Amino acid sequence: MKLLFYDLETTGVRYWKNGIHQISGEIVIDGESKEKFNFFVRPHESCLIEEEALAVCNVTSEQIKAYPPMNEVYLELTNLLAKYIDKFDKKDKFFLVGYNNSSFDNAFFKAFFVQNNDNYFYSWFWVNSIDVMVLSTLFLMDKRASMRNFKQETVARELGIELDSTKLHDAHYDVWLTKIIYDKIIENSAIKRTLF
Image 1 (tube, rainbow, N blue to C red):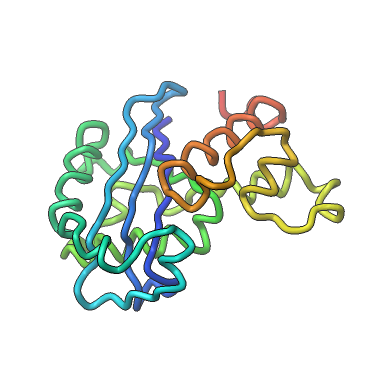
Image 2: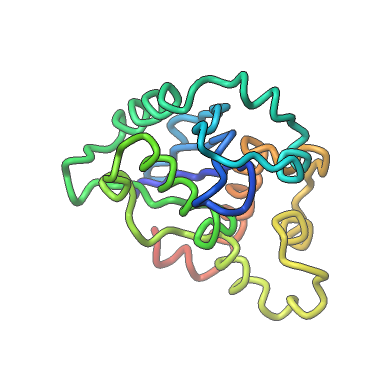
């Protein structure tokens, strides 16, 4: 089983207008971590940059405009993916794994490929991804009413995971936290029996 744990930081919340400025991930194959990556990205010039979104990540528009060009990062990323996936084999793909990725990150990630003239996003990834927020929902269903929200930090703390709040909204740190939450849920639930 090939998993790509990943997280993005973006210049806003609309994938059709905003862009990505950080892509981080960890490749896990059959339970073994193979490789980690952390790319900073200069968004496509047509992407809207919203200062409020950048403030959440503690970066400035000047900083992200100095990042490597989007097309260079795309090539580096796809070369890395190609070490583990044959995009021409319809049975060889990654499951994308993220926190709230089904309703947010996946659309931005696909748009990033399209902006790089690659319309074959699903040659790399299964269309059905693993959303750790949804897994957490099942796992914490009986505690949800007492939780103030269902943000990644709140869920992690509910699961007894120690974390550094000052590092949240850095994609690299958020990938680590997503994987810790995922591992804790899998280790402590019946889901494990269906996966392994």
